[in-house]
Image (cartoon, rainbow, N blue to C red; front, side, top):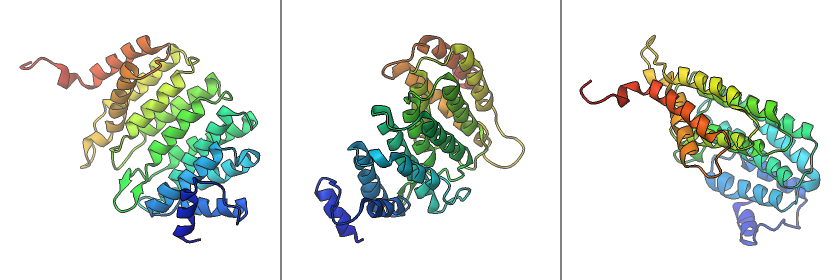
Amino acid sequence: MSGSYWRNVHAEGLAVPSDRPLHELTAELTRMLGDPDPALRDGTAYPALMTWIERGVYDDLLAGLGDGMAAGLLVGIGERDTDSVFRRSFSALVLGECIARDNRRPLLPGGKILEWGDRLTTWLLRERDLRGFVPGKGWAHAVSHAADTMAILAHSPHLATPELTVLLDVIADRLLLPVDRLFSSGEADRLAFATVAILRRNVVPLRVLEPWIARIAAAAGTRSTYDDRDPYLAGGNAEAFLRALYLQLSLGARPPQVRSDLLLVVVDALKGTNHAYLVTTGE
């Protein structure tokens, strides 16, 4: 359909059109999630699907819609700097809306939510297109959108301590993966926000978190010396995350119960990875 059709839908407050079947509208919006035009993808398709999910339009179809979004996570997987990233990244956002709907009004069996979580985290670790803002095409932001959906997933009552611990491990794994470009569009902050969402469940103990922070800190203190690439590629993402997590724990709303003890652990980690910048002038 033409862009004018969807502009009219938006002008009518995103009421579901009655002139076409819902499955046809959904298929078209799903295709538009991968469109390189941000007006169609970010300005039309995503808001429409998000609104219809929130209004309960898909309540009886939520499992199928979420499965379709989970399938979208693998479209073009492994590609870098191609337009396929938009379909993967925005599928993650819509999948998050499906999970959020179930969080507010239980509609799905726990196994389905856990399946989506597994597919989301698998995609995050396989994603190779780390661009944030793409000139002329808008936000790709795959890592940030994955983090946003993980934050929503963390609120699901279907996840307990083991599953939440896995989410933390996936965040660490993503931070430690070799990269050709460092996160530069707020990804570290979004991952830290997702981390605090996990911690607010207050079921992951400090004895689990201490070695988790130590693992990230060990990577943050690493500088590559074996080739002619930027040496900060080896540990820059981990370092940025520790700083972002410190900010969340220090200033974020609704701190987790473990906040005070974990903040000390994070501060010690930052002292270790930033020693050169913390010495007295002249030493």
